[in-house]
Length: 413
Ligand SMILES: Cc1cc2nc3c(=O)[nH]c(=O)nc-3n(C[C@H](O)[C@H](O)[C@H](O)COP(=O)(O)OP(=O)(O)OC[C@H]3O[C@@H](n4cnc5c(N)ncnc54)[C@H](O)[C@@H]3O)c2cc1C
Image 1: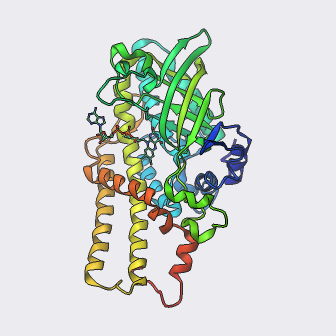
Image 2 (image 1 turned 30 degrees about the vertical axis):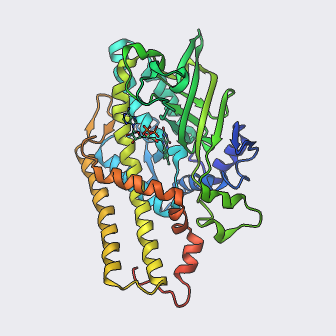
Image 3 (image 1 turned 120 degrees about the vertical axis):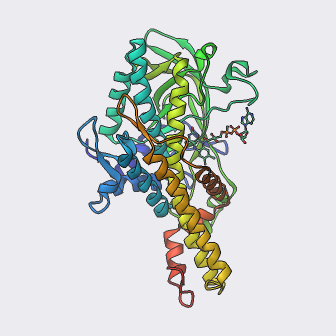
């Protein structure tokens, strides 16, 4: 199948029967719902850009699995240049939508880790996880699907290990092994884009010990599978979208500005063996988390650089509106913002340059070189998501109107 268009992606989401709730109410049509529709637009953009002749080179790659052109969100990294291209893409996309394409962003990094770890598991244990995973991911690439990346468990009491928790389901676990598959129970929390992704790719949130085998599980599942319940979280600024009569400027980043973030409950969900990529091999969980985590942190820090760039541009415009755009101390602060953004991005490129290729041919950045600065920037911008600043700044309509408004010409172009 060719690369999907944004409209085809939207149609496919409409066809899904996701068991999603917002404020206790079941969502029947995510395309029409004011909370889910904007996030769908941000993901649709990644499909449309892949079909845009002027942008295609930046958001697609020739897959070493299928030999066909695939969206970069499903591409497995083959080397430092490959990975740097993903970082560039994340920064640029964030500048365009000011939001998140989480419905397909985290999973590519999990896939890259699983591809390498299943390869090593098979080599040592004689299992066939790698072949299973490859055939699954080949389908994702061919059908151009969006896959949510499910890592974070609720974790309960942080001072206790998974097996010591008073609530056994604080970490997702296998409750039954059957001839044709496994049954899983528990939850994953804070999952970006979960309800607007076709599939979920699930992995453990931490390295596990020999006596914690039941939690050592990785698998995939369609988002509308029976037994899955999704609760959408709703930060305060999003309430405006539910207010009668509110529209346009009331929303800030009208087109894209809602972060799709869900808590997902797995109520004894059956997973057929062909979708299971780890089941009990706790000795490999450390390697999996140790590869996926720094890879994803680099990718997500790159998009925070894009968000930071938006904040910089927006701050400059606000200063202009107030007639202080040319003041020395304001310019100094703007320069500092630009410096921090570029420094963070430099750390990511440094981590990329010092990365390594695993036995399976997957590339990983150097986990030690990502730099504290990127982490701090990530936190800063994630906080501003909640406050809605990024949403406001990236509103292409509102920003464009203000930008060109008579008497308010910018001095920081
Ligand atoms: C906007 C957003 C999007 C996200 N998207 C995704 C996603 O798509 N997929 C996904 O899997 N996750 C996602 N996450 C989750 C994110 O990865 C986690 O929030 C993060 O890993 C921290 O985990 P936590 O929230 O459980 O916090 P915790 O791990 O509980 O940390 C909270 C604080 O407690 C401290 N702490 C924790 N344990 C201990 C301990 N044992 N001893 C001492 N101190 C401790 C930490 O250092 C920290 O200061 C997202 C989060 C956000 C905010």
